[in-house]
Amino acid sequence: MLSSDGGRILTSNVACAQQVEFARDSQGRGTARVTIEQLGMNKGRYRVGAYLMCERGVHVYQWIDPVAHLNLHREGLEPGYFLIQAQWENAQAAPSFNPLAD
Image 1 (tube, rainbow, N blue to C red):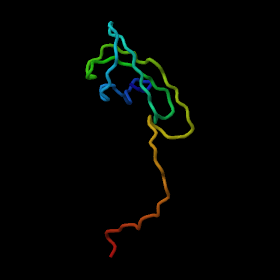
Image 2 (image 1 turned 180 degrees about the vertical axis):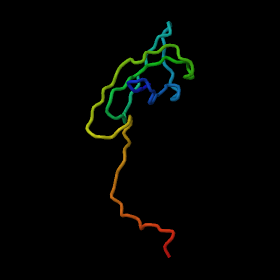
Image 3 (image 1 turned 90 degrees about the vertical axis):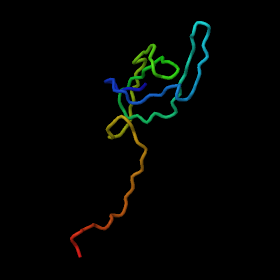
Image 4 (image 1 turned 60 degrees about the horizontal axis):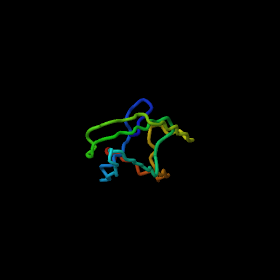
C-alpha cells in the first residue's frame, strides 16, 4: 500500500487480483516480491506498507506500515500526489458564441 506521509491511502496492489499463489514451506512461510514498473507520483514523502491478507484480500493477518519511506524529488510546480502524463498545445480560439446576436 502506498500512503501519504500523513497516512492517507493513495494506491494499492494486491496479489489476489492477479490470481498469484505463493509457495510456502511446511511451517507456512513464503516469500513475495512486487515490481512497480512506473510510479507516477509527484515529489514528496510517501509511506510504503506491507500487509499479509487472506487469499481473497479481505482479512488482514499482519501488517507493517510503514515498512519503508519514499522521498521523491523532482523539478516542477505541479501540485498533488500524482503526475498525469498530458500534452498541452496552443489551439486556435473558437469563435465566440453570443445567443443575442442576429
